[in-house]
Length: 360
Image (cartoon, rainbow, N blue to C red; front, side, top):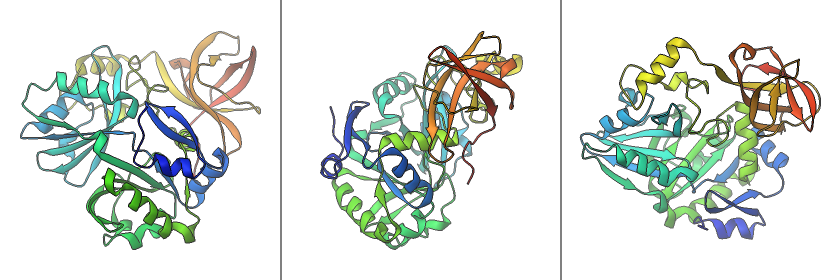
């Protein structure tokens, strides 16, 4: 099992550590609800150094990215990031990812930890364009500094105007006394903040300075369990749960990152699917009674017929009610549709709702 550059710090802080995507990762420190509320109300820090990073350079780097991703990366300018996915040949998704345009002819792809090898092999298999590819995943650490007070708390650590970096934009500059740090206004929580990419050798010093700067704001370390409840309240997809090798981006509500202004892997079939319509859709739902939906629970209609399956579910710490995502047949997918979640042989009422669950 791999460690990050900060594993010893998490262990020293008493974090509950568990294997995740081949890494020894902090799941909780003081508890999911307290950590969740820290990020919603002030500022918290996640070590997400298990994520993968690929650097693609050369005159055909963009052409390769256009070929393997669903979104249109030609719209990117230097300093902008883009959410996208890697479609497969069977109508599903290899992975979702973020594409950063670092320079002309240089792009950074950030992929899910559990899919690093799979994604590398997939992109490499399509690289007949002579693009220089480097897997730099083991060389970089990634801190997600998230929450409404993140900008104010972190501003003393950089000469860059952090408040001036728009959502899904980034700067490369000084941070916590180190140069060439990527400061990206991205995240997975819906509460604002940054993701900081730095060299492994600098990670511990940056971590310590971040906590010094954030002390007056009540900054705390946050584990992966709260990361999951935070992302679910926003309705962000989790690969392996809500999207996978068998779900199409159109079924998953990711038509907005599926651009038919270009050709990409299996684009003709996805285009046909868009024209003809899908048979199932990923929907958000809230429980109408006090109950917690869980991954793989059946979704049924009023007559008890199975119409789908829960892909993600939790008790929302912000809303104090059961929420979830799941695939249902199209005729049960409209907002306000009544559905039922089968929990231990009981069909518990739920209602399809519009995302996000959590509204600031």
